[in-house]
Image (cartoon, rainbow, N blue to C red; front, side, top):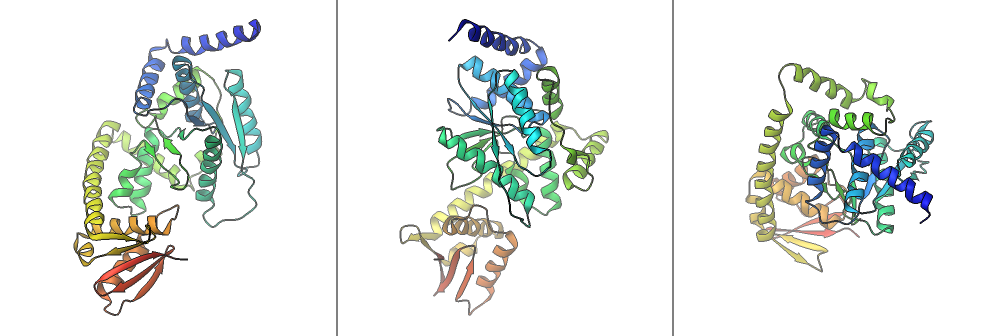
Length: 349
């Protein structure tokens, strides 16, 4: 490497290490590093949107790569959802380059209209980053979801009628988003507040993209954000909320134990896992156990990316339990047939 390049590299390294001398930034980084230690990894990809949280994540990840002598990958997605998305992606890339971070822009070439467009766009952003990561033999992607997101998602799911699993699932900091792609999403900032991440961005890169939707009261998330701010004024604290989430998570794990037990003891796989037979005892468990057990079987046999809607599964369970003449149904790529007192689930061809 040329002397000039070595000098530039040393200057960049010194920038990060000097910033870590700031007591507040050092404390945040220590928490970030501790969260990464739970995963056995040599390198990972970082999803950068350009927002304040993701810019802080980029800073923390770069500090990690310098201290551990690793090379991480950085990606930002030009989603084309706003007219200035391309400009924002280029700005983010150029700003990061000033601080020694090479960020690649991935473009979603969308020309279709979807009924659930926001969800589809989020799914596609993940897919683009996952595919690029796998090409580089990386199967762990870091996202900038932080403590405030955790609480906002809790209230959003609560208003949508989610059960225990939905209310506690976001608590997991490592998750496989797409079961057909061997990549995991890691959220190492879930115990770090937005205020702390904003502090890092202001005192390091001094750049971030402002999403105009953050001021739009038509979005449920923005309404929830304002509600949480009001609750804080009335005494709600992160510490109190954390206790609630931990208790819900413990209850959820207990139910998951009995779901696995129900599947293990009351089902039998056939035809190289393409079909499964469920005995009568499967449906004699508590309602939540039956619901989750059947949901898991449908998800696996139907080989779908997302889980079947709860209402459809409940209707199927009611049909199986209440209809004496139940013979055959189809749902989410699965065929359900009743043979004597057993149910056979097969993948729809």
